[in-house]
Image 1 (tube, rainbow, N blue to C red):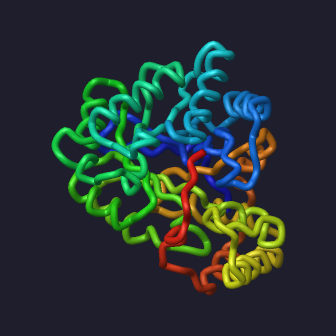
Image 2 (cartoon, rainbow, N blue to C red; image 1 turned 30 degrees about the vertical axis):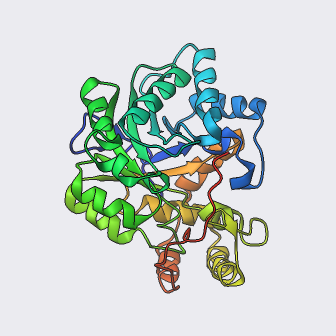
Amino acid sequence: MTQNLQKMTKLERANLSIPPLCLGMTALGDMPDTYGYGVDEARAMRTLETVFNGPIAFIDTSRNYGLGRSEDRIGKAIKARGGLPKGFLISSKLDRNMDTLKFDGARARQSVEESLKALGVSCIDLLHLHDPEYASDLKDVTGKGGAVEELFKMKEEGLCRAVGLAAGRTDIMMPMLRDFHFDAIITHNRYTLMNRHALPMMELCKERGITVLNAAPYASGILAKGASKQPLFAYMPAGDDIKSKANAIEAICGKHGVPMGAAALQFSMRSPLVASTICGVSSPERIQQTVEWANFPIPDALWHELATLPFEMDDPEANRIYKPA
């Protein structure tokens, strides 16, 4: 079964529809501490040229990816081609002050102004509040005059078309999803072939009419390249138990002649709880591979066999040390 890459999902409370695939621009900010490799500007520019000429018209970035390098490089590529292609969508994120960790309304306003300037656009299609769990005080984020309140003002002012919440810890996200009418969320590494930690939160989003974007379907690469070639899981070295589970998935995929990356990607894309799947790319070749994997025919028998494998419900990033640079 292949996926319909032209299907669009309309957000319930916003004038915005999104496609089933989105390309993540995190690695283009040159973040070797996260990915284990760097991406220089020349490679980033080649990748972005391929992105803007390709079939996936949706990218996701953030103010703090590479401490601004991701947005800066995207903006440079947009300027070089004379503007965004027609119908192309950008998702980005408001971020805390990376020195003080302050994340109040004033910082949110400063963050969006920095993003608009770096990207060279007047409106961001989908703008998220990013990583509130790292703020110096969560009350600055959620309280009166805080970052959330400022985010919703930005939608009213036309600085963005829709507003979302993009974070890691579900114990922080779920109360916020009950308290505020976000249009969308991004969850990452927590809904994959190996882990379903985000499933209760995704079900809550369905109840509340909040659109789900699921990022990192390859769990940092182990589900794309295999444990022998990419022994990283949720941005950390994979333990023997994780490697064993990845090997079991790879063996079933090999039995059916299906690339493991195709199964990992389509696992997310075929879920009725997921509107769009975000796949990080760091080279032109990865974009074509993403399209090929999304279209790879997968027999029902493979899904039936994968469904017999155990999966984790614990937070896979519970012990992660985050290094945004």
